[in-house]
Image (cartoon, one colour):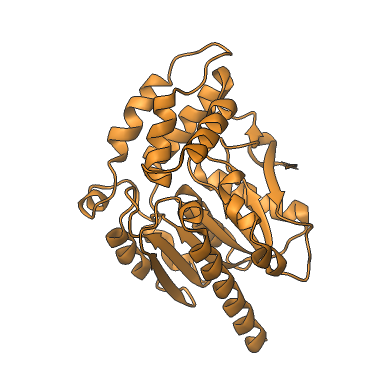
Length: 299
């Protein structure tokens, strides 16, 4: 794990990790994790020798997640997008593809909006470009208000340093992300990680702000015409947070993207890179290769 110092929000340390030593001859793929997880969400991608040999995999943890820290208690998804771009600056990486799961998807698209000349392609997994709207719920998406509001209230009071999220809290996140039938080893791993990372009052405050952001984020639909790069949207048919029907509608909302592809993965869950790594890794590698080839031909 690297900690990269950046200037944003008055100074921040951003947690990130490469799958292998950086090779400037290879394209770079930034990986952005989902709500309350960490860069370890992409263990299956880091373990794929073929993918790692073809692409620099760089997982960057958003504000409130993993090892990323800032003195500011207030942050938004726009801040995480800016921070990610500043991390690329610090690492000397001029351009990159960006893959994001759930909240990572809308951070990835924000990066493409903020720095269109630097983002070569965006790959949302199980994501949404809408805010948490009634329209999205009508298309089978989750009720964010019902999920988030009680937790925001519960996390509003100061706690002791031995506090950690409850098993119920962890399971309420693991079940929709990985699927309710997820194996015991995966459930134990992520329960342990969440309890460790959000321990004590400092952890409670970060967790509360992450939950506020999840519920109250701004939608991106009116900004999607600023996205000019290729899009590969991968979505599981068993995603219980954002439905495949919703994703099929949203993929048509990128009027200026140079190419658009959507892949529905049969039986895939919300955390698609974890539930269906073979399909994701194969699709990502094909997409990156195709875009790189087209850029070469256009040069």
